[in-house]
Length: 362
Ligand SMILES: [Zn+2]
Ligand SMILES: [Zn+2]
Image 1: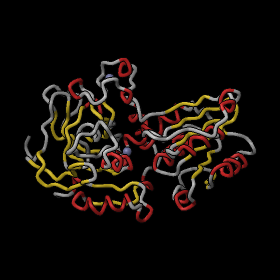
Image 2: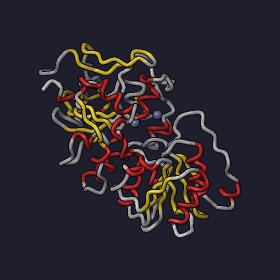
Image 3: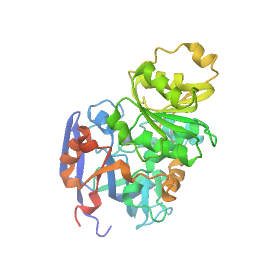
Image 4: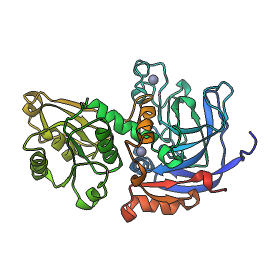
C-alpha cells in the first residue's frame, strides 16, 4: 500500500458526549470484501448528534462517526475485483449480512443480523467506523461508482439521495399527482426535488418556521407554507384547491408532523412517514376512520434498501436534483470543532456542513 500513511486524522467519539479530533489513529487495512477509501467529502448530520449522545444501542465507543461521504479507492481487499484503486465512489451506509430473509429481498436496512459484523453486517458510521476521518475501510457492497462529472461533494449525498428517493417511491407517486412534503430540512428538500423529477404536479412544502422554509426556496416547491397544528393543515388544503394531497411525505420527525401527514392525504391517498426513526414518539389525535374510511395507505419508510442510491445518483448527475444549495458550509477536517459547532448551532442557516479530509494533507 504505497503512499498510504500508517496513521490518520479522525473524529473520535471517545465516549457518549465526548468528541475528539485525534491525529494518530491507525489507518485500517482493507479486509476481504472491503475497499480502503481516502475520504474526499464527508458531512455531519443530526443523527451524529444522537450517536454522540449515546442514543444508538448498536454504537460501541470509542467510535469514528460519519455516514454521508464519498472518496477515492486507494486499496482493495484480497478478493476484490469489482473496484480498483483510483475509482471514485459514494457510500450507502446500510450493508446487510446478505443471507437473512430481508437481505435476500434487498432490504439491507432491515437486516435480521443488525450489528453482527461476524455475519457481514455493517452500518457504516453507526456500528463500524465511518467517514469523518482521512481513510475508512468499507465493504464494497456499500459502494457506488460516482457517475461522470459528479463532484466529491455531490457524491457525499449518495446515502441521502437514496433515502429521499425511496420515500417518494414508497408513496407510489404517479406523474401529475400532488405531493405535500413536511419538514424543511435536507431530506425534505431532496424529496421535493425527487418528486419533481418523477413528474409530480403540484408540490407543497410544510414547515413550522418561516426562516427555515425560506431556505428551501429554489428547490422546486410551488408553495412554502408555515404554521402549526390544524391551522397549517387548513392552509395546505387551501393551497391544494381545497383537497387533500395524492401523496404526503413526512421528514420532520415529530408526532405532530405525522398527524398532519395523515390528515393531509386525500381519500385513497398515500402517506409516507419517514422522519421519526428514533424511539419515543407517539401518534395521537388521529381518528382511525381517517385512515380506514379514508382508505389511506400509511407506510413507514426506513433509510434505503440495497442499490437505490445508484439510481439516486443518476438524478443528481442529470441535473434533476441539485444538492449544491444544501451544502451551506465547508471546512478542512482539521477544523472539525468549528464545523461541528456550526452544524449543531445551525449557524448561518447551516443545512449540510461539508468536511474535506482528503485535502488536509495536500
Ligand atoms: Zn445522516
Ligand atoms: Zn441480513
